[in-house]
Amino acid sequence: MAEVETAKAEMDWLPEILKAQALYARCLDDGPLEAWPDFFTEDCFYKITTADNHRRGLEAGLIWADNRRMLQDRVSALLHANIYERQRYRHLLGLPLIGAQGDRKAECETPFVALRIVRDGATDVFASGRYLDRWRREGQGILLAQRIVVCDSSRIDTLLALPL
Image (cartoon, rainbow, N blue to C red; front, side, top):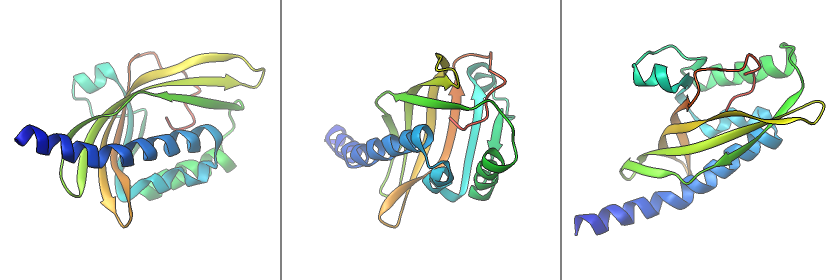
C-alpha cells in the first residue's frame, strides 16, 4: 500500500515538474533571459559544479548564487556589462526521477545536454550532466528552492557565461 501512495505522490509532482523544466529550458534557449530568476524562490541556491567536485563534496561552484537577487544580478551583467561571443543554447532534457517528496516540497534528478550554437552557426555539445533539484510549492505553482547543476566533464569551456 505504501508503494501505491508513493507512486501517487510522485504522479502529483510529475506533471508540474515536467512543465516547469520545459519552460525553464525554453527561457534559457529562446529568452527572455530576464525571466530566468523567476523560476527560483527568493531564498534559492544555484550552483554549477563538476561531477568530480560534487562527488568529493567540494562546495565551490563555477557559478554560485544563494538567493534570487544574485541570479538577477548575473542576468543584468550578462545583458549589460559582460562581453562574450554571441551564442545560444539548446537544452535537451531527460525525464526527471522524483525522489523525496511531500505536499509542499519535492526533490528530483534530471539529466540534460546543452548544445551551444555560436555566431557562425557551428553547433557543439557544450555540457552534459544532471540537475539535482529541490522544488517548493509557492502560490499556484512550483519554484526551484535549489538547483545544483552537476556537469559530467571536469573540462569546462571558458565561455560558460549563460546559466545551464
